Length: 327
Picture 1 (cartoon, rainbow, N blue to C red):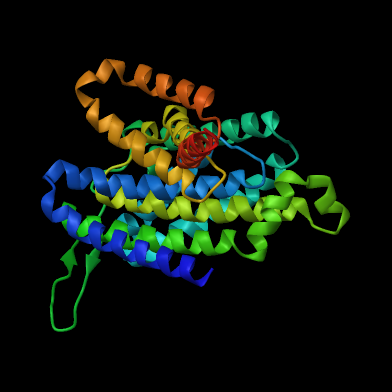
Picture 2: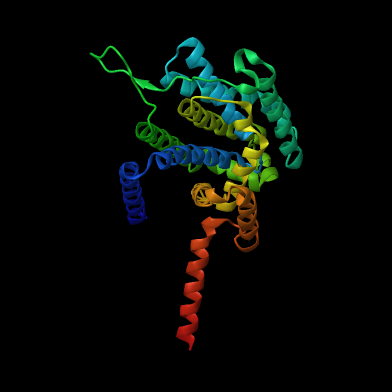
């Protein structure tokens, strides 16, 4: 067990070192791609926390937008620092999720899915309808970039170029993933699993399933709010179309293709499909079809997601060796 932990820790250190060196060998648009990939990783991993309770929602991307709009408005109109608006955006998203849980968790499964979609569309249409302060359909522009001030310097250094923002997203997302991983492997995470698989049994031993579902919804919303803030301040502009149901479908595909059985499943899904999306950029018209084919292939041949591929390969190799030994 100790050796396994050491190997895992060494692997993470090597991965982090590789990611730290990577941007210096990439082109401008590739550095952009990696920053957005880190943000999307936080989106899918936070979404997976919600699925641990057995509920799949269609409001997650809209809550990301809530985080982005909150951070952008606080920075632009109230002059608050990004380092303050980012956690505040997460808190605002968590509070909205807790309020929405009151009506939404009276529903389950398909009805919860539809209810979450309706709530998300109501929020998104509010952004379109109210030009003040949300900017209407055109959204918000000229969102301030994050800035770092040092003692002895009059002006703060803005973080808006690809390489500095790459490291900002890398460090922020890594810290968020560490917290989410620790949470899943804590008593709370184990209880969330029990709420999913043994709902009635959990209630019979005194577990308040509504409270734990609300807790998962709130925590997942907090972290997707952080992702929204990172997205808004890097892009510099926001509009309601960036958080439509079409984008939510992509998130669902990333999670399903990657798999939800392990923490790394959604990370694998979003990374593989995002890289495929870049490779097929020249075939813009065909990209939805390609995505659909990948999804169908995974459902047919890898129902547990890409995360199960390594285990299937190991099983096949061990079986072939067993057959050879018998011969």
